[in-house]
Image (cartoon, rainbow, N blue to C red; front, top):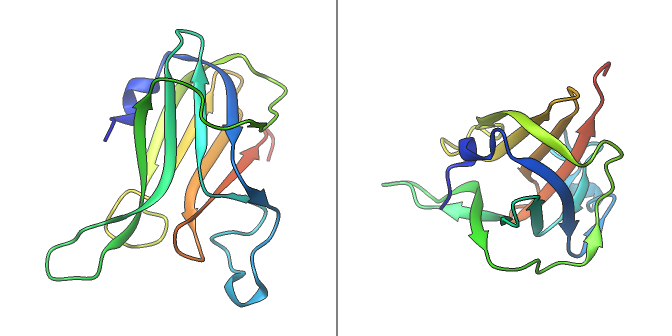
Length: 140
């Protein structure tokens, strides 16, 4: 696993996603996935030629069922081909917020805040082992 705080100061040039869809089955629709593009893997591409993979995962918790988390790891090449368009890119990451949005006692949400103030929210959503991405504009 990779410490996402080390992304601060890096210049994000692209986000690539794999298979995706706008909504989940009605039985799973809730606040965790509202207004998110649902996907199952993502590549964050930076100008220093570093590429990171983000995927939903299960995190072992002692004496409990696994928690729903996110795996962030350094990879050698872009694995995905569908661009997730953000008009402000390239742009430096000025802040990273990690949180437990689902109440699972593990990190399952990253918020990358760009120098322009735009927030890129990446989170594990329901149904389990799904991930969502959403852009929040400065004035939102």
